[in-house]
Image (tube, rainbow, N blue to C red; front, side, top):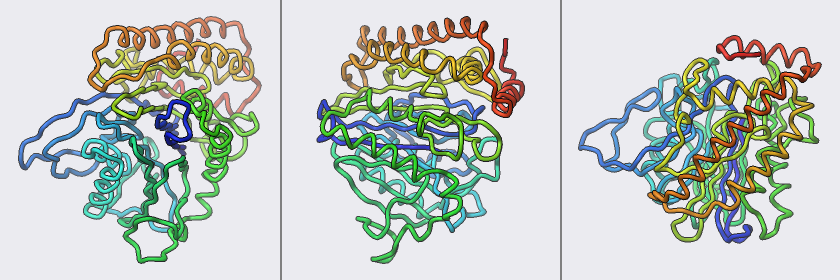
Length: 423
């Protein structure tokens, strides 16, 4: 389960464009943050995606990607031209092809690497979709987990929502704001489609799986929290939406929380393993913020520069590893999950104060920026965030665990399976 939204310049405080996404995956699937420079490629070169190889483009753009460590593609990312993309699983009556193809995360990366605008990215994705189809396991441990995909694509001129079923698609453009979760949002009102005119794209939805996904409630929550801002929306508001819980109840009921907490292996098995917020100014400036770890309600957003990535955020793997920022953070998160009623509110108060110093005052920068002051801000943000978590780890030694037996067993089993130290 995931949630993605974008807000256009007319609705933002700075006249900017803001993109935000939570990536909800299996709770012990490390999600890394990587930066790849633009590159020219030789004729007839191929690129190996997650399951198949396809011809490489003559030139690829520089990208920052948030991605499961084992997948070639990405859950979300931004390129040097100011194109930002996130994808969502769609549960439809049409099932993925049995032969391997491209998965939705591959198409996110391919769109970012090969496009200069949001519309170009949509065209790249639909062209590759029509040629290669979508097929192959999308789950980490659960290799039976397959799905169709929707995409939210933003640049400095607009927002495109692209939804797919098999090799077919429909797309629609927005200027104010748009939000997608794990359900089809486009009916007959699409701007462009591979289907005959008048086709209702929502007719392809699998109503049972879509209902269990909780996508309608999560999308409604996002829209409800964007709308009241008028023209004052900012990145702090995006952070807060990504931390949203329905009625303040964490890991209870169906999958209705934007900030998803896994609690057991059947219904509440998705967890927010990474979050991204990108702000684009009207010219060429970027502000890029990542958690580089799970649970945004327990994790500070931190600024990054494509040319100066903090150590360890590009490291993942199948088990706990001290060299991996994600895994070090996960050891903290599991301790906090076991004491959530005592930890969440006071920790979040400190996190908001932290972001007020390191995120909200971060200036826009050029993609190729090597500004020492900005590098220092980014590096210090990651250091201070780790220091904050170390302080809370020490404090949690004296706290009793919450009385939530099934939830606690689930997280302790997750820790043991991955070699995560629990004190």
